[in-house]
Length: 408
Image 1 (cartoon, helix red, strand yellow):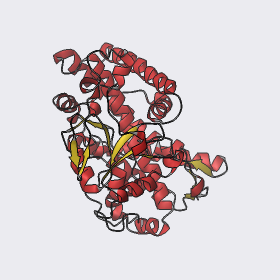
Image 2 (cartoon, rainbow, N blue to C red):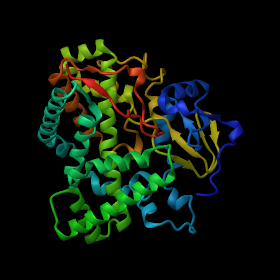
Image 3 (tube, rainbow, N blue to C red):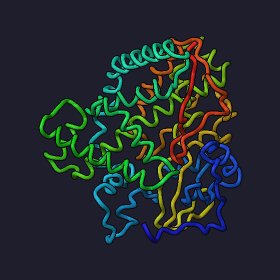
């Protein structure tokens, strides 16, 4: 990706290593400075941050901000290995018409009707996980890690069943996903994780070709083999994207949303006393907790003016959705959790053609998860001082490493 022009280091604010533990604090300061500001993240990456709600929403739908860096930035001489291409040709890093073609292949699976039909199965998985969590707490000290016991296995089990991936492999997915999305550590760790996923999906696709099933992977294999609507690299990349995106956002929503409720006891009590607020409360928790810090990277090919600031050609851009969701110009008293708030218009799932395909599924999983968790454990409480909790060292992901709780 040589040739991408970044703002000079001397002209940008350099985010410190504590950025990962308080990204909203950094974003608030940058949002106050100006609508579009150049910064350097702790991993050394330099970006123009778009932080205010109207600018973020407009930028997310702006065709001048591109995604397909493989075709538009790398150049014809770039010859990556198959694993690298596997990670870089899915629809989240594609522009029309490729994005339109790829998204159409899976849109029919993520219909509102089909997602609604998953409710009984999601409720059954939820009940089973809560039973196991209660047994674990009773057999031990009464303390469990909500992420390990519930927030992670619920969405990963659901997406594995929908795709047709053996649920027994879910712990591998957790390790691989964390390594790929981490902003610290060695690049070799991310490459190793990507290589492992590449080989895993290669074998799984071969197995589906041999024996078709009623699952999404089989449907995508049929599309690949019957009408060439996607090539083999795109097929593998699609599986990577659906699996990672299909559990990361929801797992973080459940964990960070639970933390938000436990540290706002009045709102927790209000939600318990008025369960009809739950669907709207999920939207508020998405806005307030922000499972992602920002949307995935975009870049310019020409100078682009946003919010009165001109971003140079060949620059990287981040639309900071978590900052937009805390913009006082859009949401009154934005740093206050209000489970009765009309949080409509939040951009936790993005906006424009890259709006999260799995948003209906994430909403359903969140509604079932929070409803069952709060009903089953009325004495649920934090087992540690919230100030001691650690956040994953990822620029993209806003997720806790652990969330120790007592079930009461």
